[in-house]
Amino acid sequence: MPREIVVATGNPHKVQEIRAILGPLGLVVRSLQDVGGPFPEPEETGRTFEANARIKAIAYAKATGCTVLADDSGLEVDALGGEPGVDSAVWAGAHGARAERDARNNARLAERMHGVPAERRAARFVCCMCLADASGQVLAQTRGTFEGRIGQTPRGGNGFGYDPWLWLEDVGCSAAELDAASKNARSHRGQAARAMASVLGVRA
Image (cartoon, rainbow, N blue to C red; front, top):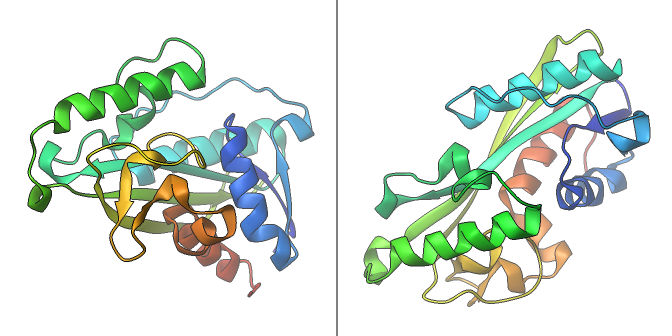
């Protein structure tokens, strides 16, 4: 199996997290920009995280001629019937820069969860990863979850996206209050990435 992979995302935070997890295991992790990007973005028509991860991995592997790791991830809130789910990144609209979209998404989450009692605030981050070789053949898919509940207020300045809202009862803080190492040790992306490392034959 290759020891060098390209992470198929335009989100630099995701690249940093995956590099922090897989780099110490001996894998060289590159971004799309490192291999000549940006590349045309495939249309994510899947209605599951698994389907969209496959779409991205296959498209970017063929575009780059590299082994590509793609992920699709998002927040599932039980009280909202699993929303925002696969629409997490664009839940409040796809226009604007990433920071603007994050702010709108978080504002919508606060509005939708207003008045929801604590016992109905269970939520989780989900990450599905897909690895494809340079020809676009899928080699493996993995999944990880990061369980918590939606807090009453956002807390913390680390992480990105909905991290300030996911409250972790066992440690008494939000996902955005964890340092990078602590988050990677338990997060949805950390779980999925370590499972993928096992597929690649490497261990911590």
